[in-house]
Image 1: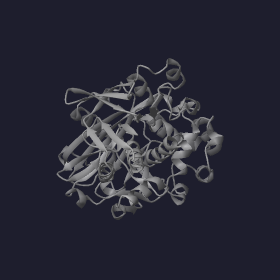
Image 2: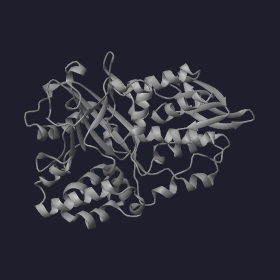
Image 3: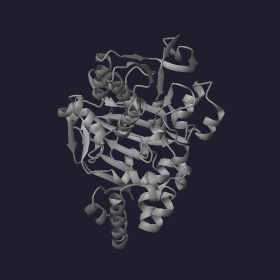
Image 4: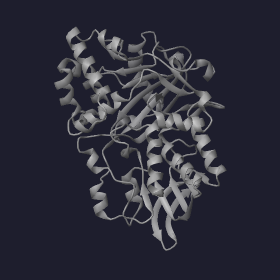
Length: 426
């Protein structure tokens, strides 16, 4: 069959490879000039690639690990045990192991024990079925206690989901805790090489990848299903036997005039937050840890990820690279602010992390945003998730909203692609 795949992220490229391996003719249409989607990268210097948003793997990410090995990149995948912490009371506190939880001084000893027991239970619970209809706030208060919830979990939920924090399903938080491992994997040289290798595999199998192609319409035709896309100001139409859209379902619906109204009503676009990252290249370290979850509500960012406390700065020409991450509503001013304005707003927070911080430490900076990065996973979220099939003959949807209860991520996108292709070939 002739397949069109909209989107060259982990999901789209993995699906394209598997379809091409089965003898289908595959064309991937990607709006951006580089592959990877939300895991896309940029060059911090010629030939040196870094992800626009921070990424690593857990040892439980078997689908991603397997694909990396399959593509001959296993030698670049290395495992590290960096320190991950929370920032609370003006300092960082390790909270990445059972001993660290038991030494977590912001809580009393009985509350630490209750917190440790609750985390242990979630790590052993095999699935989230019993938690789907419960909100994280109520469940955490009841099981781990008010002090643990108010000190550890509520600031993180509120920092990430804002006013929707009280609506988040416990199934979502289970997935965040259950699959986490102390060892973190990184593809040295950047995850960009994974997407380049996937793209090369598609073309080696006779497929094509068209970058800079923004889909504008999906319509059925007597000869199949047509995708219109804009590229360099020119509109082009391509007709396929089947089309897989990896765009958010709501966007696919808007691009498809023939989509029945009852389908859109049954699968409404979920509320989602945008992601924003300011990346700093410093001439020295900012902190001595890899990950800081910021639990102080008056700090201007939610997460501080010092990438070069995981990967040696020598791999980036001596640069010390720090992500300052946020999840915000789509209309938040951060998405229209200049990089200079964001840096000015962040500067007081940087000084709270390192009192000696000075602007002169910054050699370069970059700012990236993604509008649909984090769905708000409520107790009713699962009811709105569509299957792969749509009422439009030949059109299929597969996107990050379908990896529930797991969070968006490379591993789950790859896993979803494998499931999609098995469905298409059934």
